[in-house]
Each structure stands twice: as structure tokens, then as C-alpha cells.
Length: 359
Ligand SMILES: *Cc1c(COP(=O)(O)O)cnc(C)c1O
Image (cartoon, rainbow, N blue to C red; front, side, top):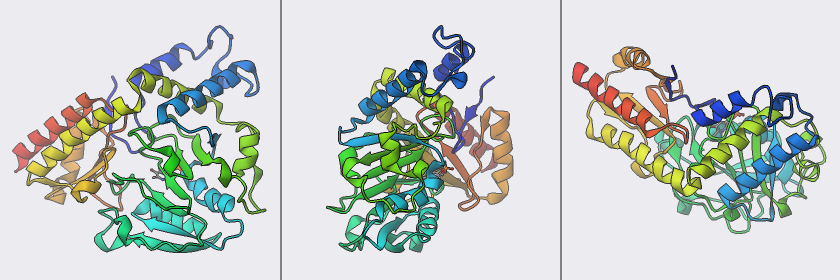
């Protein structure tokens, strides 16, 4: 029996995708092979990768002057890969610090460049997104880096920063494809796949063409965006099976009506949970109302001593991975695209009943 899995990542995948992958496991489309066994340069796999890229371009309306790269190393590797690819001729870059993932990006970038903090939400324990009017960005900086959805703190940009001529670089690991975005406002978008796109092992990078000529000479070839773009992301063996599953997720999303349709469902799911939390005095959401994430919903019980019984009861009722990250404490429900509204409704029913028993 499948549970409702509220894990922050690796996370729930659409059940039809898993079923299709299972049915194609031993013999993909009459090839007599599993996708895992195919040469990445053979016509079968090249077709799978091309279709995945084309569908992603459709889903996000990616303009033609952007490359889509299927890489490895996760968003954590990109924390180093971004400065290596963008720093030529510059000494520093600006970072907006909205929480745990921003902090990791900043720490890693410091190995490669002068990091300037454009704005920080540390003063309020990372419970909000600093307004752009409070950002301090130098003109001669290589780029401005943001994390548009802080998976741990549950803080999400509900607006698009405007950094003018300075390239905007965004870690979108945990909300890419959950909402409509205007790709043309960004220089680089990156993310690990295991939150909302597919299995771990695949890193997605979307980069504007004019930014491909800014790398430092030390950039490793496997992480060199221009070299990888010229090689069709096959300078080294790409994570073939993860690309295949992500491709099935993209097909599933298109069948759901694309990103605008899934965004409406995500709004409804998040509202169901936040509205309940706001009406209760037994639970609370620590994040400022208009900066709350639709994907990752941290919440706290008034009495921490009840955290253990809460989690145990949830698991018994078929809901797993609700424990919050240690940096924040309490609970966290990750409700990505593949989490059905029935899962959120089941959670709300459980937390209401738990309150009634313990209040
Ligand atoms: C999960 C996550 C990461 C780390 O991704 P890896 O694939 O483990 O490298 C980085 N940033 C954000 C926002 C994340 O949610």
C-alpha cells in the first residue's frame, strides 16, 4: 500500500509515472532493453533525451536563446559551478540570504570569489524574503544569486526580482515546475531533480546563451556549461535513467494541463493547509504570510512535547516524513506537484483530530 509521502526530497513521484516505468522496465518500446541498459548515444536514448528537453521547453516556455543542460552533482555542486562559470573578469558576486540553502551557496561561493550579501533575512530567523527595495547590489558584480524557494525554512519568492543588466541566478530546486515563471527574467536557473522533477542524480541547468563565455579557466569540463551545451549534455555519460523518469514526469505534467493548471492545484493545496493552521491556536506557521512556500510548509505544535506522538500517529495513519528539518524544528509537510489534494486533506483531517484529542 502506498503512503502519503511528505518528504522534502527525494520526494513523491506521480503514481502513473512509476507504473509506466515499471511496465517498461525490461523492454522499452520493443527495444528489448531497459532504458538503464541503453547507450546514451544510441537512437533510442537520444530520442528520450530530446523529447524530455522539448517537453520541458514547452512546460516552461523556455526562449530559444537559452540552453537546457542535464548534468550531475546536484544543486550543491552548482554552488561551486555557478561562480566558476560566471566570474571571468569579475572579482565578486552578490547573494541574497533567505535561509539554509542560501547559506550553503554563500559558503561555497566564498571559495571562488568575494561574496557580497545584497540582503539577508537572518534578523528574523529567515522567516521572510527581503523586499527588493532593501537589496544592495553593486554595478560591477558578476551576478545576483537567489534561492527562490527555501526548502527548509518554507520561504518562497512570490515575485520576480529585477536585477537590470546584472544576471539573476536562481536555485529553484524545490519549486521548479510548480508555478509559472518568466524564464527571460533569469540568466541562470538550476535545481536538483529529486524535489519536483524526478529522481536524484539529475541536475537541471537553464542558462542564457550570452552567459556561456564567462567561465574561469579552472572550470572542470564536466561542469563547464558551454562545453556541455556544445556536447548536448553528453560530454560525459549523463544520468540516463533519471532523465527518462524526468521525461515521464514532464509528459504527466503536460497531460495535467501544464504548469498553469498544476499551479492552481498547488495554490489550492497550500491554502487548505495554511488556512487550517491559521485558524488553530494549537499549531502555528512561523513564516510571514505573503512569503510562505506553496511547496514546503513548516509548522509547529504549541507544545513541543507532543511532536513525538504527532509523528507516530501520522505514520500509523499512512503519512510519513513530516518531521521538520533540525534547523527549524517542528513539522514540515512538503506538498510537491505529485502530492494529490487528497493527501493534504488527509493531513488536515489528522491534525484537526490530533488537536481535538490534545487541546
Ligand atoms: C535539496 C536542495 C538543494 C541540494 O540539492 P542536492 O541535489 O542535494 O545537491 C539545494 N538547494 C535547494 C533549494 C534544495 O531544496
